[in-house]
Each structure stands twice: as C-alpha cells, then as structure tokens.
Length: 77
Image (cartoon, rainbow, N blue to C red; front, side, top):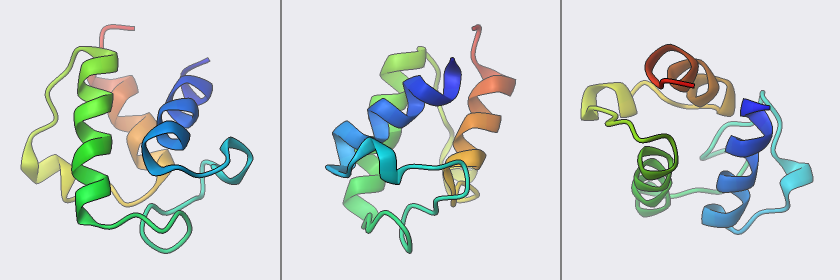
C-alpha cells in the first residue's frame, strides 16, 4: 500500500516511530521536522518513487496526506 511505503520512508528519514506517522500528521508540528529534514525527505521520496518534486510543489506539502496525494497523482505506480 502506498501509505505504508511512504510512512516507512518518513520514519526512516525523520527518525520517528512509524506508529506516530498518520495521514493527518504534519511534518513540522507533529513529526518535528526542520527544513533540512524536509529536503532529505523529498530527496528520499524522489528516489523511491522515481519522480521529481518541483520546489513550488514542495512548498505546498505540509502533511503526510499531501505527500500521498502528490505521489498518487505524479508517480507511475
């Protein structure tokens, strides 16, 4: 399932428990990510799903559900 794959990657990159990652989780407020963490996460997701996420799209991504929706719409999965 797409969410599980993304959740695993978020947990790995941000160093949080996978159980703490929900669709409603926000990266900064709920998962404690900073700007460097977010850059690393975007790079990891781009590699995992073989996509490029433009900077203007990255700026719109605030929560896990935003990532799931973006990848559903833009990755060939």
